[in-house]
Image (cartoon, rainbow, N blue to C red):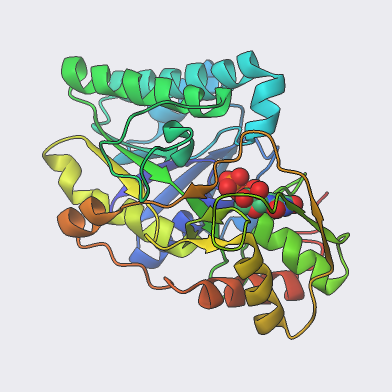
Length: 329
Ligand code: UDP
């Protein structure tokens, strides 16, 4: 049994990792501002430190109070559109706060740091599936804010020996198959919860952003990866961090279009997804699909839910059972 710090552990992806750690018998401390996270997402027996990452004194107190095997750092702003209105906020909250967290980890003698990075590092990719060594050219302040963290972590390894795993998530989706936790953002901007909400009548009709992309059906293609598979990847990289730092793409390697997602939700839910067709959303690449071969090969990671219908089935179950999410807003 080991003890881990999970920042953003009350949030969507973080809470799924917390559940996986608890299932292994590990001890978990969550640090979360609860701005996007939910108290109800944290299982009994897990300590919650309700604090801002920017509060360096509180963060230092956390490292003084407990000794951690590793830090899993999820807490972040994550909206591309918002980052283009408030780029400096993303630099402060994502870049500066992440690197001061890493600094606190180094000061406390923690040797392993797992960082939620993003496919947005690649901007408008020239080649898909996107390889691990593809050009890093963020097309948004959000992507840049995460890339700057990766660069800081590189130097923290060179100088201090802080081993880091930067996991570049593609499209997180779905919910724990055991129920009880799932996706609850405010505002919600992601395709699958918006489709399901439209079908359930808890949200307005969906607008499809663009039908004139160079894809077979004209709508954007994304690589949807189940949130529990994202979580298991975080566990899979830990042993390798004994040796070296890591950078991996984290996706299924298969792409689905917006229309295919709508079809899947209609198939699984047995109800139509009311929708209309609108213009493109600024900054959306036509196709974002990961080549995750390196992660699979080097860690043995395998997704349990590679099929879109299986991902949607778990998301549908969560939203149907929790039409108001955690109900704490
Ligand atoms: N999308 C859409 N309508 C919406 C929200 C999203 O057509 O109301 C599309 C979006 O343009 C993208 C895909 O769905 O092609 C996935 O978007 P999401 O925001 O879920 O994730 P992103 O790929 O932006 O991280």
